[in-house]
Image (cartoon, rainbow, N blue to C red; front, side, top):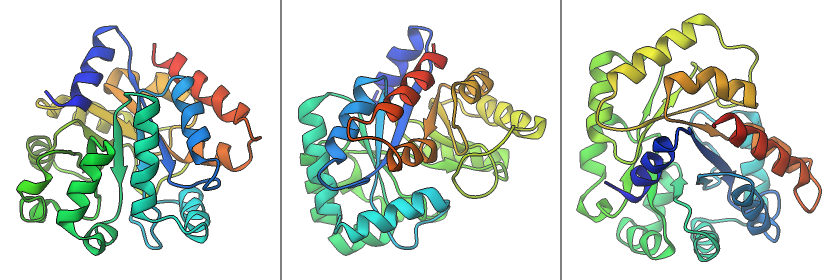
Length: 261
Protein backbone atom coordinates (compact mmCIF):
# COMPACT_ATOMS: atom_id res chain seq x y z
CA UNK A 1 0.00 0.00 0.00
CA UNK A 2 1.41 3.38 -1.02
CA UNK A 3 1.80 6.41 1.24
CA UNK A 4 -1.24 8.05 -0.37
CA UNK A 5 -3.50 5.01 -0.35
CA UNK A 6 -2.51 4.18 3.23
CA UNK A 7 -3.48 7.68 4.32
CA UNK A 8 -6.84 7.44 2.54
CA UNK A 9 -7.51 4.02 4.07
CA UNK A 10 -6.71 5.27 7.56
CA UNK A 11 -9.11 8.20 7.19
CA UNK A 12 -11.87 6.04 5.70
CA UNK A 13 -11.56 3.54 8.55
CA UNK A 14 -12.35 6.39 10.94
CA UNK A 15 -15.64 6.85 9.03
CA UNK A 16 -14.51 9.98 7.22
CA UNK A 17 -14.05 10.94 3.62
CA UNK A 18 -10.74 12.38 2.44
CA UNK A 19 -10.36 16.06 1.58
CA UNK A 20 -7.76 16.76 -1.11
CA UNK A 21 -7.10 20.43 -1.82
CA UNK A 22 -5.61 21.79 -5.05
CA UNK A 23 -3.26 24.77 -4.93
CA UNK A 24 -1.52 26.50 -7.81
CA UNK A 25 2.20 26.72 -7.08
CA UNK A 26 3.24 30.28 -6.27
CA UNK A 27 -0.32 31.62 -6.07
CA UNK A 28 -1.59 34.08 -4.98
CA UNK A 29 2.02 35.27 -4.60
CA UNK A 30 5.38 33.54 -4.51
CA UNK A 31 6.07 34.86 -1.00
CA UNK A 32 2.66 33.91 0.43
CA UNK A 33 2.23 30.47 -1.11
CA UNK A 34 3.71 28.48 1.78
CA UNK A 35 1.55 30.33 4.30
CA UNK A 36 -1.50 29.57 2.14
CA UNK A 37 -0.55 25.89 2.09
CA UNK A 38 -0.06 25.88 5.86
CA UNK A 39 -3.49 27.46 6.36
CA UNK A 40 -5.09 24.77 4.22
CA UNK A 41 -3.25 22.00 6.09
CA UNK A 42 -4.00 23.45 9.53
CA UNK A 43 -7.72 23.62 8.79
CA UNK A 44 -8.28 20.08 7.62
CA UNK A 45 -6.82 19.15 4.23
CA UNK A 46 -5.74 15.50 4.14
CA UNK A 47 -3.88 15.69 0.82
CA UNK A 48 -2.32 18.62 -1.03
CA UNK A 49 -2.30 18.68 -4.83
CA UNK A 50 0.07 21.29 -6.25
CA UNK A 51 -0.46 22.44 -9.81
CA UNK A 52 2.51 23.40 -11.95
CA UNK A 53 1.44 26.53 -13.87
CA UNK A 54 1.27 25.97 -17.60
CA UNK A 55 -0.05 28.18 -20.37
CA UNK A 56 -2.21 25.57 -22.10
CA UNK A 57 -3.26 23.11 -19.40
CA UNK A 58 -5.87 20.46 -20.11
CA UNK A 59 -9.42 20.81 -18.71
CA UNK A 60 -8.74 23.74 -16.40
CA UNK A 61 -11.43 26.40 -16.19
CA UNK A 62 -11.03 30.19 -15.99
CA UNK A 63 -10.31 30.34 -12.25
CA UNK A 64 -7.37 27.95 -12.34
CA UNK A 65 -6.18 29.24 -15.72
CA UNK A 66 -6.10 32.76 -14.27
CA UNK A 67 -4.10 31.52 -11.28
CA UNK A 68 -1.66 29.82 -13.68
CA UNK A 69 -1.25 33.11 -15.56
CA UNK A 70 -0.51 34.92 -12.30
CA UNK A 71 1.96 32.24 -11.20
CA UNK A 72 3.74 32.33 -14.54
CA UNK A 73 4.03 36.12 -14.24
CA UNK A 74 5.52 35.44 -10.81
CA UNK A 75 8.14 33.32 -12.57
CA UNK A 76 7.05 30.00 -11.05
CA UNK A 77 8.64 26.88 -12.57
CA UNK A 78 8.76 23.18 -11.77
CA UNK A 79 11.95 23.84 -9.82
CA UNK A 80 10.09 26.39 -7.68
CA UNK A 81 7.20 23.97 -7.23
CA UNK A 82 9.53 21.26 -5.94
CA UNK A 83 11.12 23.76 -3.57
CA UNK A 84 7.67 24.61 -2.23
CA UNK A 85 7.03 20.91 -1.75
CA UNK A 86 10.20 20.55 0.32
CA UNK A 87 9.00 23.32 2.62
CA UNK A 88 5.54 21.79 2.94
CA UNK A 89 6.95 18.35 3.72
CA UNK A 90 9.24 19.88 6.33
CA UNK A 91 6.14 21.40 7.95
CA UNK A 92 3.81 18.38 7.65
CA UNK A 93 3.78 14.71 6.69
CA UNK A 94 0.74 15.32 4.48
CA UNK A 95 0.80 13.48 1.12
CA UNK A 96 1.66 15.82 -1.74
CA UNK A 97 0.65 15.22 -5.35
CA UNK A 98 2.12 17.15 -8.25
CA UNK A 99 -0.23 17.93 -11.14
CA UNK A 100 1.28 19.07 -14.41
CA UNK A 101 0.97 18.91 -18.13
CA UNK A 102 3.47 16.52 -19.70
CA UNK A 103 5.39 19.24 -21.58
CA UNK A 104 6.95 20.92 -18.52
CA UNK A 105 7.99 17.52 -17.17
CA UNK A 106 9.54 16.53 -20.49
CA UNK A 107 11.29 19.87 -20.76
CA UNK A 108 12.71 19.47 -17.26
CA UNK A 109 14.15 16.08 -18.25
CA UNK A 110 12.53 12.83 -17.11
CA UNK A 111 15.52 11.45 -15.18
CA UNK A 112 16.17 14.77 -13.44
CA UNK A 113 12.47 15.28 -12.75
CA UNK A 114 12.03 11.88 -11.11
CA UNK A 115 15.13 12.35 -8.97
CA UNK A 116 14.31 15.90 -7.90
CA UNK A 117 10.60 15.19 -7.32
CA UNK A 118 11.42 12.20 -5.12
CA UNK A 119 13.97 14.20 -3.12
CA UNK A 120 11.41 17.00 -2.69
CA UNK A 121 8.90 14.57 -1.18
CA UNK A 122 6.37 14.25 -4.00
CA UNK A 123 4.20 11.18 -3.38
CA UNK A 124 2.05 11.06 -6.50
CA UNK A 125 1.69 12.45 -10.00
CA UNK A 126 -1.27 13.55 -12.10
CA UNK A 127 -0.37 14.17 -15.75
CA UNK A 128 -3.82 14.31 -17.33
CA UNK A 129 -2.65 14.76 -20.92
CA UNK A 130 -0.80 11.42 -21.04
CA UNK A 131 -3.17 9.19 -23.08
CA UNK A 132 -4.12 5.97 -21.36
CA UNK A 133 -2.78 4.06 -24.36
CA UNK A 134 0.67 5.65 -23.82
CA UNK A 135 0.70 5.26 -20.04
CA UNK A 136 3.15 2.37 -19.82
CA UNK A 137 5.40 3.86 -22.51
CA UNK A 138 5.69 7.22 -20.73
CA UNK A 139 5.89 5.96 -17.15
CA UNK A 140 9.11 3.96 -17.32
CA UNK A 141 10.72 2.34 -14.29
CA UNK A 142 12.12 5.68 -13.15
CA UNK A 143 8.56 6.70 -12.15
CA UNK A 144 8.03 3.72 -9.85
CA UNK A 145 8.75 5.92 -6.82
CA UNK A 146 5.44 7.74 -7.33
CA UNK A 147 1.77 6.90 -7.45
CA UNK A 148 0.38 7.54 -10.93
CA UNK A 149 -3.16 8.87 -10.61
CA UNK A 150 -5.37 8.65 -13.69
CA UNK A 151 -8.68 10.41 -14.39
CA UNK A 152 -12.00 8.87 -15.35
CA UNK A 153 -14.72 10.98 -16.95
CA UNK A 154 -18.49 10.63 -17.33
CA UNK A 155 -17.89 9.36 -20.86
CA UNK A 156 -15.49 6.58 -19.80
CA UNK A 157 -16.85 3.12 -20.58
CA UNK A 158 -16.83 0.44 -17.89
CA UNK A 159 -14.01 -1.38 -19.67
CA UNK A 160 -11.96 1.81 -19.75
CA UNK A 161 -12.69 2.51 -16.09
CA UNK A 162 -11.44 -0.99 -15.23
CA UNK A 163 -8.26 -0.31 -17.23
CA UNK A 164 -7.76 3.01 -15.43
CA UNK A 165 -8.28 1.28 -12.11
CA UNK A 166 -5.68 -1.35 -13.01
CA UNK A 167 -3.05 1.19 -14.12
CA UNK A 168 -3.64 3.76 -11.36
CA UNK A 169 -2.09 3.78 -7.93
CA UNK A 170 -2.81 5.96 -4.91
CA UNK A 171 -6.40 6.51 -6.03
CA UNK A 172 -8.50 7.03 -9.13
CA UNK A 173 -9.50 10.62 -9.86
CA UNK A 174 -13.15 10.63 -10.95
CA UNK A 175 -14.17 13.73 -12.90
CA UNK A 176 -17.75 14.43 -11.86
CA UNK A 177 -19.00 16.21 -14.96
CA UNK A 178 -18.16 16.72 -18.61
CA UNK A 179 -16.24 19.94 -19.22
CA UNK A 180 -13.61 22.04 -17.49
CA UNK A 181 -12.86 22.67 -13.83
CA UNK A 182 -14.85 25.27 -11.94
CA UNK A 183 -17.70 25.69 -9.51
CA UNK A 184 -21.16 24.72 -10.70
CA UNK A 185 -24.78 24.74 -9.65
CA UNK A 186 -26.76 21.69 -8.61
CA UNK A 187 -25.59 18.28 -9.81
CA UNK A 188 -28.32 16.40 -11.66
CA UNK A 189 -29.43 12.80 -11.27
CA UNK A 190 -27.43 11.77 -14.34
CA UNK A 191 -24.24 12.91 -12.62
CA UNK A 192 -25.05 10.93 -9.48
CA UNK A 193 -25.88 7.78 -11.44
CA UNK A 194 -22.59 7.97 -13.31
CA UNK A 195 -20.61 8.48 -10.09
CA UNK A 196 -22.34 5.45 -8.58
CA UNK A 197 -21.53 3.40 -11.69
CA UNK A 198 -17.89 4.43 -11.61
CA UNK A 199 -17.54 3.83 -7.87
CA UNK A 200 -18.97 0.33 -8.22
CA UNK A 201 -16.64 -0.45 -11.13
CA UNK A 202 -13.42 0.54 -9.36
CA UNK A 203 -12.20 -2.31 -7.17
CA UNK A 204 -8.41 -1.98 -6.86
CA UNK A 205 -8.14 1.66 -5.77
CA UNK A 206 -9.92 4.22 -3.69
CA UNK A 207 -11.85 6.84 -5.67
CA UNK A 208 -11.83 10.60 -5.14
CA UNK A 209 -14.27 12.91 -6.95
CA UNK A 210 -13.27 16.29 -8.36
CA UNK A 211 -14.58 19.14 -10.56
CA UNK A 212 -17.25 21.55 -9.37
CA UNK A 213 -17.20 20.87 -5.62
CA UNK A 214 -17.45 24.18 -3.81
CA UNK A 215 -19.23 23.65 -0.48
CA UNK A 216 -19.89 21.29 2.37
CA UNK A 217 -23.29 20.57 0.84
CA UNK A 218 -21.62 19.35 -2.36
CA UNK A 219 -19.36 17.09 -0.29
CA UNK A 220 -22.38 15.56 1.43
CA UNK A 221 -24.06 15.00 -1.94
CA UNK A 222 -21.07 13.07 -3.28
CA UNK A 223 -19.99 11.25 -0.10
CA UNK A 224 -21.99 8.04 -0.70
CA UNK A 225 -20.26 7.57 -4.06
CA UNK A 226 -16.59 8.10 -3.21
CA UNK A 227 -13.80 7.75 -0.68
CA UNK A 228 -13.00 11.44 -0.79
CA UNK A 229 -13.29 14.71 -2.68
CA UNK A 230 -10.92 17.08 -4.48
CA UNK A 231 -11.56 20.81 -4.29
CA UNK A 232 -9.64 23.16 -6.54
CA UNK A 233 -11.36 26.14 -8.17
CA UNK A 234 -13.31 27.11 -5.05
CA UNK A 235 -10.08 27.20 -3.02
CA UNK A 236 -8.12 29.10 -5.67
CA UNK A 237 -10.96 31.60 -6.04
CA UNK A 238 -11.06 32.10 -2.29
CA UNK A 239 -7.30 32.63 -2.09
CA UNK A 240 -7.42 35.27 -4.80
CA UNK A 241 -9.71 37.47 -2.70
CA UNK A 242 -8.52 36.59 0.82
CA UNK A 243 -6.60 38.56 3.43
CA UNK A 244 -2.97 37.92 4.30
CA UNK A 245 -3.95 35.41 6.99
CA UNK A 246 -6.19 33.46 4.57
CA UNK A 247 -9.15 33.73 6.92
CA UNK A 248 -11.90 33.02 4.37
CA UNK A 249 -10.00 30.13 2.80
CA UNK A 250 -9.43 28.60 6.23
CA UNK A 251 -13.17 28.83 6.93
CA UNK A 252 -13.96 27.14 3.60
CA UNK A 253 -11.53 24.30 4.27
CA UNK A 254 -13.03 23.75 7.72
CA UNK A 255 -16.52 23.65 6.21
CA UNK A 256 -15.42 21.10 3.59
CA UNK A 257 -13.63 18.92 6.13
CA UNK A 258 -16.56 18.98 8.53
CA UNK A 259 -18.78 17.69 5.73
CA UNK A 260 -16.35 14.80 5.23
CA UNK A 261 -17.13 13.48 8.73
